[in-house]
Amino acid sequence: MKTLFTMKRISSGFLCVFFFLNLFLYSQTPDCGSILAAYNGENGFGIYRFNAPDYKPTLFVRGFGFSGWCNMPRVSSDLNTLYFTTKTPDNNATVLARLDLENPKAKPELLPLGQEVKPGMDFVYAAPHPSGKWLVGSMRLSEQSPDHDLFRLDLSDDASQTEIHDFFHSPAWEGLPSFSLDGKKIAFIQSAFLDPGTYEDGASSRAQQLVVADVSPDRVAFNPLVFFKASRFVEMPQWSPDGKNIVIQVSAFTDDYDIIRVDVDSRKWEVLTRSPHDDYNPTYSVDGKWIIYAQKLEYKTTKNYPDPLDRGEGFYGNRILAIPENGGDPILLFQSPKKISFLWFPQAIK
Image (cartoon, rainbow, N blue to C red; front, top):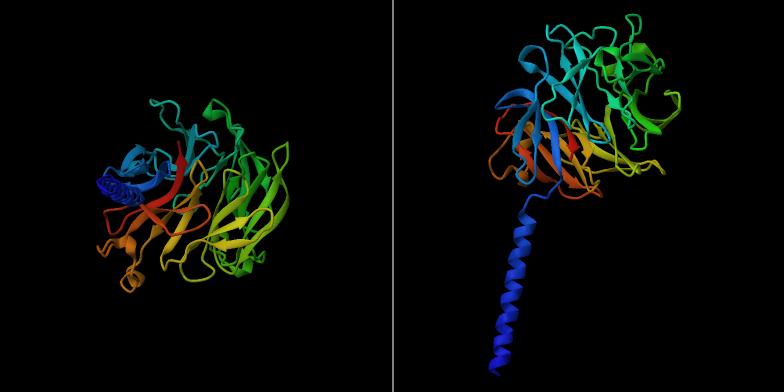
Protein backbone atom coordinates (compact mmCIF):
# COMPACT_ATOMS: atom_id res chain seq x y z
CA MET A 1 0.00 0.00 0.00
CA LYS A 2 2.82 2.36 0.89
CA THR A 3 4.59 1.50 -2.36
CA LEU A 4 1.44 2.27 -4.36
CA PHE A 5 1.05 5.62 -2.57
CA THR A 6 4.69 6.45 -3.27
CA MET A 7 4.26 5.57 -6.96
CA LYS A 8 1.20 7.84 -7.17
CA ARG A 9 3.19 10.71 -5.64
CA ILE A 10 6.04 10.16 -8.07
CA SER A 11 3.59 9.95 -10.98
CA SER A 12 1.81 13.15 -9.89
CA GLY A 13 5.11 14.92 -9.42
CA PHE A 14 6.29 13.83 -12.85
CA LEU A 15 3.08 15.10 -14.45
CA CYS A 16 3.44 18.47 -12.71
CA VAL A 17 7.05 18.82 -13.82
CA PHE A 18 6.09 17.77 -17.35
CA PHE A 19 3.22 20.28 -17.42
CA PHE A 20 5.30 23.22 -16.20
CA LEU A 21 8.22 22.27 -18.44
CA ASN A 22 5.93 22.30 -21.46
CA LEU A 23 4.38 25.56 -20.30
CA PHE A 24 7.86 27.06 -19.95
CA LEU A 25 8.99 25.84 -23.36
CA TYR A 26 5.77 27.00 -24.99
CA SER A 27 6.18 30.48 -23.52
CA GLN A 28 9.68 30.89 -24.96
CA THR A 29 10.30 32.71 -28.22
CA PRO A 30 10.97 30.09 -30.90
CA ASP A 31 14.31 30.02 -32.67
CA CYS A 32 13.56 31.40 -36.12
CA GLY A 33 17.23 31.97 -36.86
CA SER A 34 19.03 35.29 -37.12
CA ILE A 35 17.51 38.20 -39.02
CA LEU A 36 18.84 41.32 -40.71
CA ALA A 37 16.49 44.30 -41.13
CA ALA A 38 16.65 47.99 -41.94
CA TYR A 39 15.95 49.77 -38.68
CA ASN A 40 16.27 53.17 -37.08
CA GLY A 41 17.55 52.09 -33.69
CA GLU A 42 19.53 53.54 -30.82
CA ASN A 43 22.68 53.67 -32.95
CA GLY A 44 20.98 55.47 -35.82
CA PHE A 45 19.77 54.34 -39.20
CA GLY A 46 21.30 51.17 -40.59
CA ILE A 47 20.89 47.45 -41.02
CA TYR A 48 20.60 45.70 -37.67
CA ARG A 49 21.00 42.08 -36.69
CA PHE A 50 18.38 40.32 -34.56
CA ASN A 51 19.58 37.07 -32.95
CA ALA A 52 17.63 34.37 -31.16
CA PRO A 53 16.50 33.93 -28.47
CA ASP A 54 15.86 37.53 -27.39
CA TYR A 55 16.04 39.22 -30.84
CA LYS A 56 17.51 42.44 -29.50
CA PRO A 57 18.75 44.70 -32.35
CA THR A 58 22.51 45.17 -32.81
CA LEU A 59 23.83 47.56 -35.45
CA PHE A 60 25.34 45.46 -38.23
CA VAL A 61 26.35 47.87 -41.02
CA ARG A 62 25.94 51.48 -42.04
CA GLY A 63 25.68 52.68 -45.60
CA PHE A 64 27.15 55.78 -47.20
CA GLY A 65 25.80 59.30 -47.51
CA PHE A 66 24.21 61.35 -44.77
CA SER A 67 23.98 59.41 -41.47
CA GLY A 68 24.96 56.18 -43.22
CA TRP A 69 21.49 55.61 -44.64
CA CYS A 70 20.86 52.09 -45.99
CA ASN A 71 17.75 50.10 -46.81
CA MET A 72 16.29 47.10 -48.67
CA PRO A 73 18.75 44.39 -47.55
CA ARG A 74 18.89 41.19 -49.61
CA VAL A 75 21.04 38.19 -48.74
CA SER A 76 22.52 35.82 -51.32
CA SER A 77 21.21 32.23 -51.34
CA ASP A 78 24.50 30.93 -49.94
CA LEU A 79 24.12 33.50 -47.12
CA ASN A 80 27.62 34.84 -47.77
CA THR A 81 26.86 38.27 -49.29
CA LEU A 82 24.57 41.13 -48.31
CA TYR A 83 23.23 43.58 -50.90
CA PHE A 84 21.47 46.78 -49.92
CA THR A 85 20.48 50.23 -51.17
CA THR A 86 22.38 53.26 -49.93
CA LYS A 87 23.35 56.77 -50.96
CA THR A 88 26.57 57.85 -52.60
CA PRO A 89 29.00 59.51 -50.14
CA ASP A 90 27.94 62.92 -51.48
CA ASN A 91 24.29 61.96 -50.80
CA ASN A 92 23.26 62.83 -54.37
CA ALA A 93 22.30 59.41 -55.72
CA THR A 94 20.83 56.09 -54.62
CA VAL A 95 23.03 53.11 -55.44
CA LEU A 96 23.60 49.45 -54.63
CA ALA A 97 26.24 48.19 -52.22
CA ARG A 98 27.42 44.76 -51.19
CA LEU A 99 29.11 43.37 -48.10
CA ASP A 100 31.03 40.12 -47.62
CA LEU A 101 29.33 38.43 -44.66
CA GLU A 102 32.13 35.88 -44.36
CA ASN A 103 34.72 38.57 -43.61
CA PRO A 104 34.13 40.30 -40.24
CA LYS A 105 36.49 43.12 -41.21
CA ALA A 106 34.95 43.78 -44.64
CA LYS A 107 33.48 47.16 -45.52
CA PRO A 108 30.57 47.69 -47.92
CA GLU A 109 31.52 48.52 -51.51
CA LEU A 110 29.47 50.49 -54.03
CA LEU A 111 28.26 48.86 -57.25
CA PRO A 112 28.10 51.41 -60.09
CA LEU A 113 24.90 51.22 -62.14
CA GLY A 114 26.01 53.31 -65.11
CA GLN A 115 23.65 56.13 -64.21
CA GLU A 116 22.53 58.06 -61.19
CA VAL A 117 19.24 57.22 -59.54
CA LYS A 118 17.55 60.25 -58.02
CA PRO A 119 17.29 59.99 -54.23
CA GLY A 120 13.79 60.00 -52.82
CA MET A 121 12.25 58.83 -56.09
CA ASP A 122 13.77 55.57 -57.28
CA PHE A 123 15.11 52.89 -54.97
CA VAL A 124 17.10 50.02 -56.39
CA TYR A 125 15.83 46.74 -54.99
CA ALA A 126 18.08 43.96 -56.30
CA ALA A 127 17.99 40.16 -56.03
CA PRO A 128 21.27 38.24 -56.34
CA HIS A 129 21.25 35.15 -58.56
CA PRO A 130 22.13 31.96 -56.62
CA SER A 131 25.28 31.58 -58.74
CA GLY A 132 26.62 34.77 -57.18
CA LYS A 133 27.77 36.00 -60.60
CA TRP A 134 24.95 38.44 -61.37
CA LEU A 135 21.87 40.08 -59.92
CA VAL A 136 18.58 41.53 -61.13
CA GLY A 137 17.24 44.87 -59.97
CA SER A 138 14.58 47.41 -60.82
CA MET A 139 15.03 50.98 -61.91
CA ARG A 140 14.18 53.41 -64.68
CA LEU A 141 16.71 52.62 -67.39
CA SER A 142 16.28 55.80 -69.42
CA GLU A 143 14.82 59.28 -69.13
CA GLN A 144 12.40 58.45 -71.95
CA SER A 145 10.96 55.41 -70.17
CA PRO A 146 8.09 56.34 -67.80
CA ASP A 147 8.29 53.03 -65.93
CA HIS A 148 10.77 50.76 -64.24
CA ASP A 149 12.22 47.72 -65.97
CA LEU A 150 14.27 44.82 -64.71
CA PHE A 151 17.98 45.11 -65.38
CA ARG A 152 20.79 42.59 -65.01
CA LEU A 153 24.03 43.53 -63.33
CA ASP A 154 26.96 41.21 -64.04
CA LEU A 155 29.25 41.08 -61.03
CA SER A 156 32.99 40.69 -60.65
CA ASP A 157 35.42 40.67 -57.77
CA ASP A 158 36.21 44.27 -58.63
CA ALA A 159 33.10 46.32 -57.83
CA SER A 160 34.12 48.99 -60.37
CA GLN A 161 33.94 46.47 -63.23
CA THR A 162 30.21 45.66 -63.01
CA GLU A 163 28.23 45.73 -66.24
CA ILE A 164 24.52 46.48 -66.69
CA HIS A 165 22.14 44.87 -69.24
CA ASP A 166 18.41 44.55 -69.92
CA PHE A 167 16.77 41.54 -68.24
CA PHE A 168 13.04 42.00 -68.81
CA HIS A 169 11.23 44.87 -70.50
CA SER A 170 7.54 45.58 -71.15
CA PRO A 171 5.24 48.63 -71.35
CA ALA A 172 4.29 47.99 -67.72
CA TRP A 173 6.16 48.68 -64.49
CA GLU A 174 8.28 45.76 -63.20
CA GLY A 175 10.08 45.50 -59.91
CA LEU A 176 10.83 43.67 -56.66
CA PRO A 177 12.48 40.56 -58.17
CA SER A 178 13.19 37.33 -56.29
CA PHE A 179 14.98 34.18 -57.52
CA SER A 180 14.04 30.62 -56.66
CA LEU A 181 16.80 28.83 -54.77
CA ASP A 182 17.89 26.87 -57.86
CA GLY A 183 18.06 30.09 -59.92
CA LYS A 184 15.87 28.68 -62.71
CA LYS A 185 12.86 30.91 -62.04
CA ILE A 186 12.32 34.49 -61.00
CA ALA A 187 9.28 36.11 -59.42
CA PHE A 188 8.57 39.83 -59.75
CA ILE A 189 5.75 42.34 -59.56
CA GLN A 190 4.19 43.96 -62.61
CA SER A 191 1.56 46.64 -63.12
CA ALA A 192 -1.64 44.94 -64.19
CA PHE A 193 -2.70 47.90 -66.35
CA LEU A 194 -0.50 48.72 -69.31
CA ASP A 195 -2.16 52.05 -70.12
CA PRO A 196 0.21 54.80 -68.82
CA GLY A 197 -2.79 57.09 -68.44
CA THR A 198 -4.09 55.08 -65.50
CA TYR A 199 -1.34 56.20 -63.15
CA GLU A 200 1.18 59.00 -62.76
CA ASP A 201 4.11 56.63 -62.32
CA GLY A 202 4.46 52.87 -62.33
CA ALA A 203 5.08 52.58 -58.62
CA SER A 204 1.68 54.07 -57.78
CA SER A 205 -0.36 51.81 -60.05
CA ARG A 206 -3.21 50.35 -58.01
CA ALA A 207 -3.67 47.06 -59.86
CA GLN A 208 -0.64 44.80 -59.70
CA GLN A 209 0.19 41.16 -60.29
CA LEU A 210 2.70 38.52 -59.30
CA VAL A 211 4.59 37.17 -62.32
CA VAL A 212 6.85 34.12 -62.45
CA ALA A 213 9.21 33.69 -65.42
CA ASP A 214 11.84 31.18 -66.46
CA VAL A 215 15.49 32.22 -66.49
CA SER A 216 17.50 31.30 -69.59
CA PRO A 217 21.18 30.23 -69.58
CA ASP A 218 22.06 33.54 -71.25
CA ARG A 219 20.54 35.43 -68.30
CA VAL A 220 17.23 36.77 -69.58
CA ALA A 221 13.66 36.17 -68.42
CA PHE A 222 11.18 34.41 -70.70
CA ASN A 223 7.77 32.74 -70.59
CA PRO A 224 6.26 35.09 -67.96
CA LEU A 225 3.07 33.78 -66.33
CA VAL A 226 0.69 35.63 -63.99
CA PHE A 227 0.32 33.77 -60.68
CA PHE A 228 -1.76 36.29 -58.72
CA LYS A 229 -3.55 39.53 -59.55
CA ALA A 230 -5.21 42.09 -57.29
CA SER A 231 -7.02 45.39 -57.67
CA ARG A 232 -4.51 47.11 -55.43
CA PHE A 233 -0.89 46.67 -54.38
CA VAL A 234 0.90 43.32 -54.68
CA GLU A 235 4.49 43.49 -53.47
CA MET A 236 7.59 41.81 -52.03
CA PRO A 237 7.60 38.22 -53.41
CA GLN A 238 9.87 35.80 -51.57
CA TRP A 239 10.39 32.09 -52.38
CA SER A 240 10.29 29.29 -49.84
CA PRO A 241 13.60 27.39 -49.59
CA ASP A 242 12.03 24.31 -51.25
CA GLY A 243 10.66 26.40 -54.15
CA LYS A 244 7.08 25.24 -53.58
CA ASN A 245 5.59 28.54 -52.37
CA ILE A 246 5.93 32.29 -52.78
CA VAL A 247 4.83 34.75 -50.08
CA ILE A 248 3.70 38.29 -50.97
CA GLN A 249 2.11 41.30 -49.30
CA VAL A 250 -1.26 42.39 -50.68
CA SER A 251 -3.56 45.31 -49.88
CA ALA A 252 -6.51 44.19 -52.04
CA PHE A 253 -8.83 42.98 -49.28
CA THR A 254 -8.66 45.86 -46.80
CA ASP A 255 -6.81 49.14 -46.46
CA ASP A 256 -4.04 47.24 -44.67
CA TYR A 257 -1.47 44.81 -46.04
CA ASP A 258 -1.90 41.08 -45.48
CA ILE A 259 0.56 38.25 -46.09
CA ILE A 260 -0.50 35.74 -48.75
CA ARG A 261 1.11 32.42 -49.67
CA VAL A 262 0.87 31.26 -53.30
CA ASP A 263 1.38 27.61 -54.24
CA VAL A 264 3.71 27.50 -57.25
CA ASP A 265 2.29 24.34 -58.83
CA SER A 266 -1.44 25.03 -58.48
CA ARG A 267 -1.28 28.86 -58.21
CA LYS A 268 -3.82 28.61 -55.40
CA TRP A 269 -3.35 31.17 -52.66
CA GLU A 270 -4.12 31.55 -48.98
CA VAL A 271 -4.27 34.58 -46.71
CA LEU A 272 -1.98 33.98 -43.72
CA THR A 273 -2.52 37.18 -41.70
CA ARG A 274 -5.76 38.98 -40.91
CA SER A 275 -4.71 41.73 -38.52
CA PRO A 276 -6.03 45.30 -38.97
CA HIS A 277 -2.40 46.47 -39.22
CA ASP A 278 0.04 46.54 -42.11
CA ASP A 279 1.70 43.10 -42.34
CA TYR A 280 4.48 43.46 -44.87
CA ASN A 281 7.92 42.37 -46.17
CA PRO A 282 7.47 38.61 -45.66
CA THR A 283 10.43 36.23 -45.87
CA TYR A 284 11.17 32.63 -44.98
CA SER A 285 13.50 31.51 -42.20
CA VAL A 286 16.58 29.64 -43.43
CA ASP A 287 15.07 26.28 -42.43
CA GLY A 288 11.75 27.13 -44.13
CA LYS A 289 9.72 26.47 -40.98
CA TRP A 290 8.73 30.09 -40.33
CA ILE A 291 7.47 33.05 -42.28
CA ILE A 292 8.95 36.21 -40.79
CA TYR A 293 7.44 39.61 -41.48
CA ALA A 294 7.28 43.20 -40.27
CA GLN A 295 4.19 44.88 -38.91
CA LYS A 296 3.30 48.54 -38.57
CA LEU A 297 0.65 49.39 -36.01
CA GLU A 298 -1.71 52.31 -36.43
CA TYR A 299 -3.47 54.12 -33.60
CA LYS A 300 -6.80 54.29 -35.43
CA THR A 301 -7.03 50.49 -35.53
CA THR A 302 -5.04 49.58 -32.44
CA LYS A 303 -7.19 51.41 -29.89
CA ASN A 304 -10.26 49.39 -30.93
CA TYR A 305 -8.48 46.09 -31.46
CA PRO A 306 -7.74 43.70 -28.56
CA ASP A 307 -4.26 42.65 -29.62
CA PRO A 308 -2.69 40.11 -27.21
CA LEU A 309 0.77 40.85 -28.61
CA ASP A 310 0.59 44.40 -27.26
CA ARG A 311 0.96 42.99 -23.73
CA GLY A 312 -1.40 45.64 -22.43
CA GLU A 313 1.06 48.42 -23.20
CA GLY A 314 -1.00 50.17 -25.87
CA PHE A 315 1.95 50.14 -28.24
CA TYR A 316 1.77 51.91 -31.61
CA GLY A 317 4.94 51.31 -33.57
CA ASN A 318 6.76 48.57 -35.49
CA ARG A 319 7.70 44.99 -34.81
CA ILE A 320 8.89 41.71 -36.32
CA LEU A 321 6.60 38.70 -36.13
CA ALA A 322 6.77 35.06 -37.21
CA ILE A 323 4.11 32.51 -38.10
CA PRO A 324 4.52 28.80 -38.86
CA GLU A 325 5.04 28.09 -42.56
CA ASN A 326 1.61 26.45 -42.81
CA GLY A 327 -0.09 29.37 -41.05
CA GLY A 328 -1.07 29.94 -37.45
CA ASP A 329 -1.00 32.54 -34.71
CA PRO A 330 1.73 35.19 -34.92
CA ILE A 331 4.61 35.11 -32.46
CA LEU A 332 6.34 38.31 -31.43
CA LEU A 333 10.11 38.35 -32.06
CA PHE A 334 10.87 42.05 -31.64
CA GLN A 335 8.93 45.19 -30.81
CA SER A 336 10.59 48.58 -31.24
CA PRO A 337 10.62 50.76 -28.13
CA LYS A 338 9.61 53.82 -30.12
CA LYS A 339 6.12 54.81 -31.13
CA ILE A 340 7.44 56.01 -34.47
CA SER A 341 10.29 53.99 -35.89
CA PHE A 342 11.53 52.58 -39.19
CA LEU A 343 11.62 48.79 -39.46
CA TRP A 344 11.64 47.20 -42.92
CA PHE A 345 12.74 44.20 -44.97
CA PRO A 346 13.63 41.41 -42.55
CA GLN A 347 15.99 38.89 -44.17
CA ALA A 348 16.90 35.52 -42.68
CA ILE A 349 20.58 34.64 -42.30
CA LYS A 350 22.57 31.94 -40.52
